[in-house]
Length: 224
Image: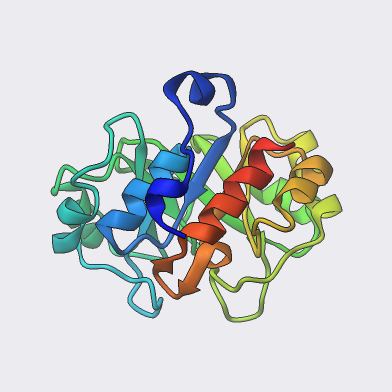
């Protein structure tokens, strides 16, 4: 199907249906524009070399060149050096950070811009305790726990365990992990998060987004 055949959300529709959504693992400018047109509140790029969606700081100006300033531009890191984070921030493109490793709160807060701390969920009680250790976080993201992997696994979690965190956390909780157009509605109903984050569930290959899957995902979000 051709892009012009899709009906994107109007400004008025966005204002009344602005459930927080993030599309992560963006590697191309056109994918950033399409995701934003469907209603993404945030777009994420990954600065973690083992990831197949890894991008260089030198590329992000082009990736986000046609994205609205109202859309959050999130840089995702896994146990980075402060030098790498600062090099990315020096581009002036990224306005929000996401930490997906074992970074402590002092490190996450040291860059003086909003950040989201990702937690891999084994059980809700442990995840809630971990979330409370990041008092300075703007949001908490829940991802599926898979041994030796930091995220982007495409695996879903037990959403009832995620619900324990969303109910007990005093910060907005974002749900990730294996979400797609077929399951995002059910995940939102069960876990009751403040937002959702998708990557592999809207791809045709790692880092390459699929417009039909993006449409299906946002349809699933707005039907809830």
